[in-house]
Length: 490
Image 1 (cartoon, rainbow, N blue to C red):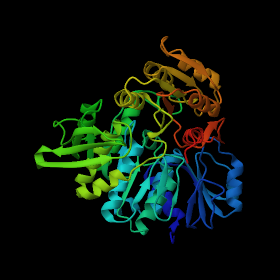
Image 2 (image 1 turned 90 degrees about the vertical axis):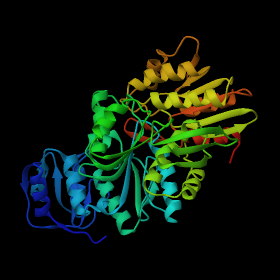
Image 3 (image 1 turned 30 degrees about the horizontal axis):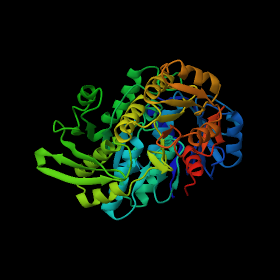
Image 4 (image 1 turned 90 degrees about the horizontal axis):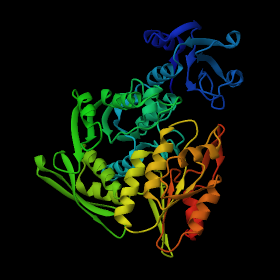
């Protein structure tokens, strides 16, 4: 990539945003941006950022080619030019956007937010658009990232600003027409998408989640961060049936809005949902346009028809033909999202459900699609964040299960036993449970002890092959692989 920007121009950008506290710079050219001391090239501008940041990282970056740094604190200023700012995250966003020439402005962007369903809707829509353009388009999701230049697994749902704008730029120079991406509340809270204006946005749903000292102090802050997508979008597709719909619509008074839902109060609505041997068929109608299309998905879980409806609505808004929508929906399968395996009369469901809304939708679907079956659930809650998930798990999963194995789910700096005890306090007396701290052992036991007719539900980890333990990504086989191994499925 042939990119260049002067350090003095960067200073002026930051001064215009009232971010500069102190500076000591000379005229220099910048050809690369990084906040990772392992990723340094000639003439790099290095951002000192991160919860676990150490001053030695800056020394390493300078030794490898960094010519200046931006930080909220002055470090070894005698070795390097510097700009001290009052908000490093916003500074990253401002500089990255300019450095990569606001590349997002030249792509048909679709930003998707919601408490649940973002990843699945992103994949549904991305596959539809791939079919429509007869080529692969850009994708930024919890699971994977694609720009033609980058094709990799993801570690953050919405990347840090430096990476995000680089991905926009890669998509632009690769001549990709569409870019579909998940936009989290944390992306706005931490300014990862500061100044980014999307051409299209989707608001799927919202419920209380991500409330903790490390995320959002309260639901009002969480909702406000999600609403910021509306402020930075030309057109919004909004779920007519979501909680807080009126608040969302009030915020969207200055943008074009198209709604979707379960009845004809919405612009696009779903009818005739029929469970098939694999997946569901359904119709999507718009009475105002005298439109009705027939579609089908292979993904299990009745709630995925709602996700498919959301993607279909946006596709119709973008002018996509029904045949491309049909093909895109049919080919969509998201690893770790409602993957269902059956063997010897036992059903194992691997799903990423991890909060109140996703728990509720998942178990409603199980009740409808597997009536009268005994339900065994395996899962836990993360350490150090989203504390209400412990209550949600205990109450919703507890009420919907016959037996529960409480286990590790990214415990970080908390003891697994403590997290499980917190969850257990909310499990109804009617529901039996046991604590098995080792997740592999818990999943194996749940499947091994299952009887014919049982439904085993593996919650929250999906295809993830790690646990977050004391700040380290620790290898974990993944619920998906363990389920396949235990059932003897390739």
